Length: 420
Image (cartoon, rainbow, N blue to C red; front, side):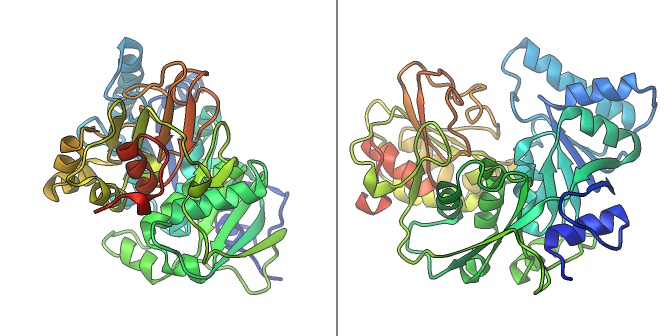
């Protein structure tokens, strides 16, 4: 009997010789991640436990990115809890403002997460790291506190669902469109407590940034994890890091609860309409939808390739009157690269702002909150009611090209409509 990538990683980390979906296991954690919203509670619970030292100061990661740079006194105090705990415990991977980034882009960039790892994070989009062939999943802060004590966690082994993508991507179509299309097909609970495994010739041709975008949004289909089999692109991405990765691939006779197979050769850019990531339509079906704000960035689409795509459309042009364009790179390294390449200048000259890395606008935290009646198109990952501010606002999700094109016209627009 064969096993999937997810099952093989969970077997190794639990010390078991066999494993089955639905079983509860106790597993050793490689990385335990938290941010300025979720870490303070985990730290509080850890201190209540009576233990003086964390299990391993090198396996805990603290990233103040949600309300940082601190937007108010409460946010500043939340961030200070992380800073004090990191100093007290000698935690190596604490990233203060100035060296931090959005956690799910920062950790792969730093080589903190590698193929074959088991990663838990007190943030639902921890599933991003499955793009590297890791098993990465979100958990609550109290689960994280337990991991701080002994480096272990309880997990229910998920069944796996395979998604095979065939054909060839058209221009302006990306990994973001593939995952939006998938969620649109199966719904926000279509992979509930499952491991989504993305494969096929389209995935093999997809770059790492596109793979991160796909796995990042597995949670939006209810999944525990999203995974892509490591290949030469993965090996090249992690080759500079010292720690040795473990590459797993699913067996030919691995068990899948369901298998989906799609030819996406005719797929056009996809847009998730309010108020669910599953309310997906092709961009051509959204004529005349006016916007007040365009947000380009986040842990889903804030990497350098995303910024290059947006800048190429915006270069030499001005955003539509009355539209606020907010661009925020995912890490400081990406920020510097964007400045070096002149992308930051393009965004500013187009009438936008170029921000320091932050999760702020994505969760309606700061730097882009929507007012009553306002509409935004964003390259972020969620558009729930009130997600970016007022419950009377509207959020559409898209890839960076669609967001940039829409900023220029003031309405949701296919990038092909923008003249160079």
